[in-house]
Length: 358
Picture 1: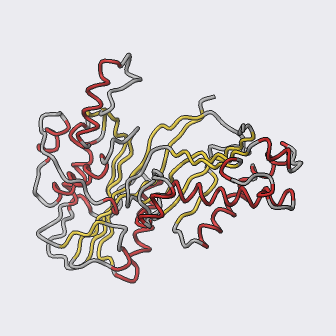
Picture 2: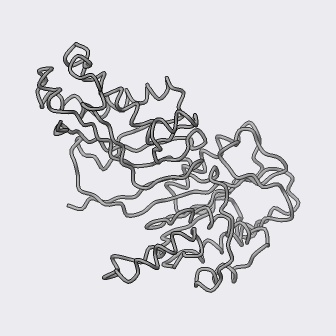
Picture 3: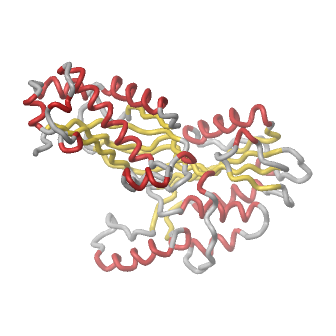
């Protein structure tokens, strides 16, 4: 059977990472056994259900009359730009959603290629149907049209970078409204926001981040270095950190905590200004209330767990456990001290940057 009837939609997904076992599909049987779905498998399963409904609505009959096994005549594939770990949240996880149908099915149902293509290319209708089914399944997952798609037609593009934000809650006790969205750290000593800002500035620019990723990535980079031809094929542990930032909200209360976090994430994804009045001279000395802090990292690419290790490194400087010199030595490749990455549930993918390559 040939799947020569194909329609691609360019979308991005927003989801709460705590409900999923990461992005990469492990197969329906594995996910049924563990009881924890992946984002990719959920999108593909719901996409297949929408595809069946749309074809049924076109021909006004059951598609199962044409083939005993639906998976042989219809397929939905979600191809994302990058895989997120279990627990990581997304505001802008871009992907190509491919709907494939066997030509034999369309012939048996007397559906023309134009009719099928027109129906499945209506991205506003398809995303609405997908989101309705996500809601019915009680999934904290939504998909939206990706602006790179112009009039639902394919546009050549390439990914130029990503922006991550790591959220830290510093206070006497965890706030219920921020559960699963931030990394809680109980008050112990002072938190020097000025030192955190200076540490973020040190990270900016081109560096070898081999000490900010897992050992398997470094080993793979060593094996591939001899095959690189030019700077375009960069060593896999080198990245350009284009922009960093810190956004701070002081004296956060339980009833407004979630709204404040949402506001900080929106500012972090759109603004290059530092928020938090007097942050340069600010420490948390003497404060008894909760502080909410968002660390922003924008780079041309990220290694595995790189953003989480960077967040841990910068935070350690803020509480006085490490110094700027320690961070500089690691960036220069002279310091091989290993850190446990900050927990995944504090990390948010804010934006995927792209450009048209016409």
